Amino acid sequence: MNKIFLGALCTLFFKIGLFANSVVLENEGILKEHTIEKMQIIGDELHTKTGVYLGICAVKNLGNLSLNEKAYEISKELKEPYVFLIIATENKKINIYTSSDVALNKDEILSPFPNKGSIIPLLVSVKKGQDPFNPALLNGYADMAEKIASSRGVELESNLANTNKNILNFIRIIFYGSIILVIVSGIYYKRIRKNGE
Image 1 (cartoon, rainbow, N blue to C red):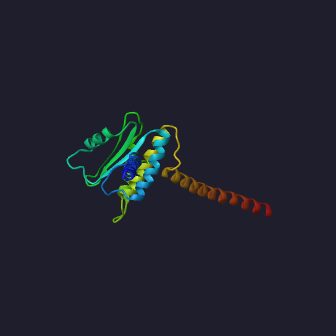
Image 2: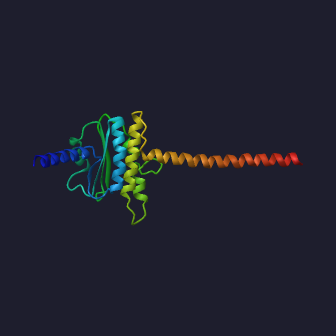
């Protein structure tokens, strides 16, 4: 009987410890499991390397609370330094909150312009019938993690932003390399023709 009780107690503490650093503060069925898993990997690496907790609260409705009141409730439970994003899908509200010791330009992340913002442009550009929230929130989460890490002089290996940057850099190299190859071969063949005449 004591072994069963001890085993149950150990399991309880393990589960509490396992979810103690969950990056998802609240989720009312908005975030899918694979999105949460990716966010957790990024958030764990960020916390390990910088000490900054990065969380997300995805609710459908705020009820009779304002976004700031909800943020105040959440911030009371968090240990500094922290950053968290709140989205209320039915209220169509989103904002980022930080502790005083974290430098993050939330206006840049929440910008509606595609060349700056990493959340809102994806939310408004999704086709009907597709889930706009998971890709936009994951992209925004990865962008916030990247900006926090770089402000603290750290590079994240698991961040999606790094993967996207590497892919874009590879495409740029191929594109510009092709242009240079066409120009060089044009000059080469022009010289051959000139020398041949």
